[in-house]
Length: 159
Image (cartoon, rainbow, N blue to C red; front, side, top):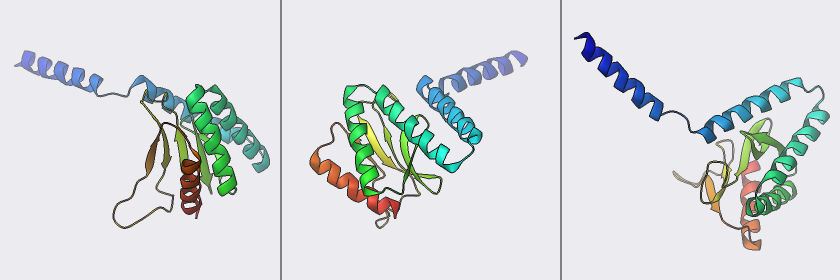
């Protein structure tokens, strides 16, 4: 009977290991913890805003070519269409917040080894449309038409 319990416990432990976080997810959590610690050390609101934007631009500069180009264009569109949103890093991704809450974010394809980048919105975005609406969009390229759609969505989301 004791051996049966050991075998069951061993198989449960094995199953738990396989259901854990991926290396990319663990890296994102570590990045978020680092962001929170850095934010707690800042003194003035102006310093925080300048450092946050610099961190977003640095993160964008680190991206591979296609993701970097899309992130740069999205950053410009968000800044133009909702200048009151504050750029900040969120789980290591460029994000834009209102009153400290992330409204939208750009996730590069490399972030979680996806085949496309994503531009997404959190629940603080005001995009409600009936009982179902999209909260993330797959991106392979940001065209002029895409920029217009992103600008309209960001304006609406930022309220």
